[in-house]
Image (cartoon, rainbow, N blue to C red; front, side):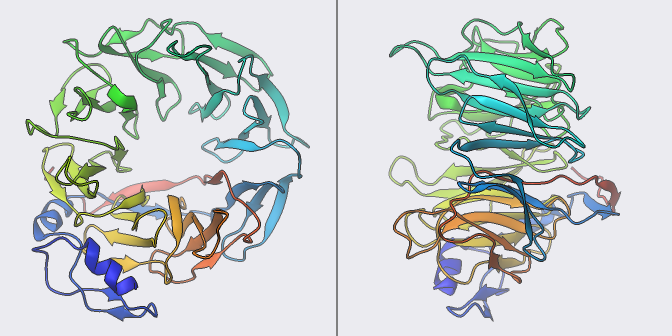
Length: 435
């Protein structure tokens, strides 16, 4: 079965046989997943050397509580005991010293270094259960809380608010948002800026209270159908879709409004799942490109060079999910197959063109994959093929396909999960000056 799935995702015209897997998980010959042109322009990827990196732990929640787990041994410790309130979100500060938690949809807790237990710092005043997202500012002390209250009546806009929580326990409201933004609010990775659409323009605002600045020169349809304003990892650029859904073209612009470019200039370019995944070095964007719309609901995983606009298909048409970048920016993980059917997790090496199946039996509902900060593990949740209840079981696997193992039992529904950050020291090796 694995060999059959591997053959289905291969791009026609690719190089001679490299690797695939048979039904027993043994390596066999097959075509590579990327074409030679991709190898030519991906060799310009900056290689990151990661030094002095301690092993990363996983944190995850189940109905039995919140846990921290060491992936090598599988040993876990309880961070919070079992309760009657669900966990909805986890967010670690960059240093891994502080943890923020959303419970019961509207309650935010902070866990401080040396504290015996998390402290309640925010309670929602929404009439119905809100959606709350969390982000830490780069100082590792200030927590950004984004609250979206459901619309009180049909047709009315949802209410968006931002709050800043500090270690002292003080929570302040960010009052610079427009009354009814035309998009969601997107917090930059540094936690110090936000982007949103209002009045048919994209605005960027600092969370220090500085005046919002318009970064688009002409009015347009930005963020249609919930498409994101996706910040680059260094918080200096925004990628976004412009146009009426589904005829939306991918653009990029600096956060100061300069150097706006269209990355997908085709007149009839369409997008259905507006996922925008920046590479860790900010040089590439991976996305799902529809295949032969509207006659097919299949997609292709594509890659665009932000500097040159060169775009290349990485896979054949199919059904893909759980796309994620490795920390070194040279590998991608993704699931192939229909969610309710038989899915396999794969790793694609963009430089060597090696293509590796990471799971040796079909799974269901592989919805998310996350690389550990040191790149040594990939964690993902999936439903066993014979589970009619759809339980999400947490798994770990190494990027070469070894050490695959479930970390939780089939009666433990895992959501959410997140790697505990570790402090990384990076430098470039053999970088190519060619964009």
